[in-house]
Amino acid sequence: NAGVTQTPKFQVLKTGQSMTLQCAQDMNHEYMSWYRQDPGMGLRLIHYSVGAGITDQGEVPNGYNVSRSTTEDFPLRLLSAAPSQTSVYFCASSYQAGSTDTQYFGPGTRLTVL
Amino acid sequence: GDSVTQMEGPVTLSEEAFLTINCTYTATGYPSLFWYVQYPGEGLQLLLKATKADDKGSNKGFEATYRKETTSFHLEKGSVQVSDSAVYFCALKHGGSQGNLIFGKGTKLSVKP
Image (cartoon, rainbow over all chains, first blue to last red; front, side):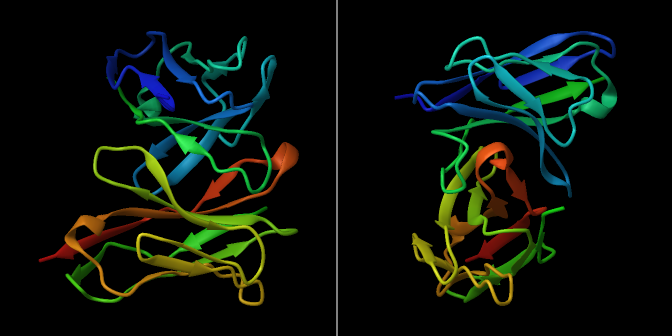
């Protein structure tokens, strides 16, 4: 049981480039989400999904796309990277979206956009 | 909207000192409350949680009580260790379509030998 895995761990992009951050979980969790962590800002929700085929926007969705074709995978796409997207990105999952369901976090991807 | 406020850090303590990290929240309804810990270079790990008023969450010597009357969920530990050095995040969570964590900004704790 690997939990929540993320790849890559580190990435450097140039402005305007595109890339996909991968996230997978092997716990059969319905709920998955993406957060970004910036100094002094805590974690802010980008997008989330309550099940395969269902996605929705969080607090800071601009510049990011997601899809959920399987229960296990929830990739985050940057279509045209900007320096403001330099951040640490965390994927998380929980059994469902219930208030008592614990969210489990991946190890993070540190992204730098030059 | 809902929000979580944590005490500003960084907090620096000597080993075996008593720790309190204050957390207050603003929320409609009855959310669950969480403390997560982030060790250097790692992701977030659940430290403890409480799902209803007057519940006490505890783990690894840390405790926090869900106080509805003061809308607080302060984190305490009686004797900190160097290994407790980390960033601590308070968070709240509703269920259903609003089942997303809302985080405070985090409090960095450094424990000196």
